[in-house]
Image (cartoon, rainbow, N blue to C red; front, top):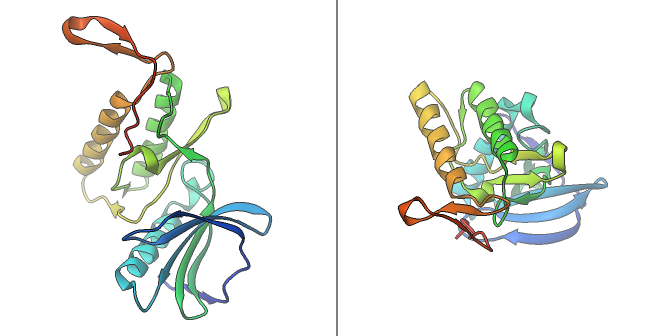
Length: 197
C-alpha cells in the first residue's frame, strides 16, 4: 500500500490513552473532530510501523463499513519523515464494565459478521477492542484496532472467531446481571466484573 507522506497535522488537546509495546495512542481533536491518533517512530519502532501500515490496509479494505461497524479512517502515512501516524474517528468507550442486553449483543454479532463478509478476521477479540455508543434504540457498536487482522482464507477461521465473540459475550454482564449459579440457581449480582484485565 502506498502511504501518504505529509506534514504532521495540528492535533489539539492530545491525551495519551496507551503507551507500551505498541504504538503510542492518543485521543485528540483534529479539524474540529474527536479522533484517535496512533503514532510510531519509523527509526525505533519498525515492527510497530509495519503493524500500523497493515492496519491502514485493512481499514481501506473495510471502507464500506467505515463509520458504521469500524471507525472512519481519517489519515494514514509517514509524517515529517519521522513517524507513522494513523488517525481514526473516536467511536466511544470500550465494553469494559458495560452491561449488554440481547439487542446490544445482536448488534455486536452483526458488526463482526459484516467485517467477516468482507473476508477479514479481526484477530484480537476483546472487550477493549469493541466500542459502544449506548443511545437506547440507536446504540452502535464498532470494532477497533485492526493491527492483528488477517484476510481469511477459509470460512472455518471466520467461524472460530465468531465463536470467540460468543464466548466473550457469554462473560459480559447483563443489565440486571442475572447469573446462573451452581445447581442451576439464578443469582442476581450487583456489579459486573470487568473482562478487560
